[in-house]
Length: 238
Image (cartoon, rainbow, N blue to C red; front, side):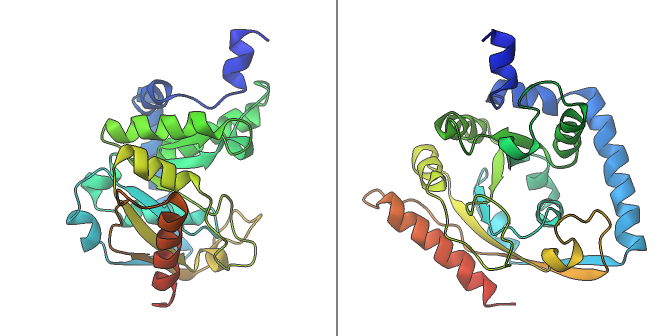
């Protein structure tokens, strides 16, 4: 396998991710796409409301946002309920196996990658082959001052119920020393159900909880349970 093929088959590292984020073309496309989505939001009567954003402004940045996941609209709503100063330097971990052009020959996949990077500072993480390399990449982004949005369930919930959280988040929190802000998003599944591209009218609510720190003598499994429990607790506020 050539180095070019290896690159196509692997998620980008932190340097490649930040280089893409700085691209003038990407910035222009971000402006155009976000402007278009603002129009869609108004025309389709989509609203969002955030509770607990003071938990973010009172916390030293960067942080790890750990959210439930029901719909592709979740990411857009989370990013646009963050304070602007935080949003400008927040990236979103997206499934490399879902969005990426792994074989390097799909124009559609490359376009999707570019769009999600433009809209949300999204970058690919490996869920299947080598998740440790993606964990190192996220640690590096955090060390450079970037907050990260992660969906610890690993995929969207088809039922709408919160699934058990995967353990990678605990590794990132432990090694980076950064706090985890629990997030619960409600209503995205109704506004943008699976396999739909035009949103239905509705209100999406986002709840931010108190930051959680990995304790020195804490087991990873116990920390993950704390984060998951915090997200489930936020769900009771709906």
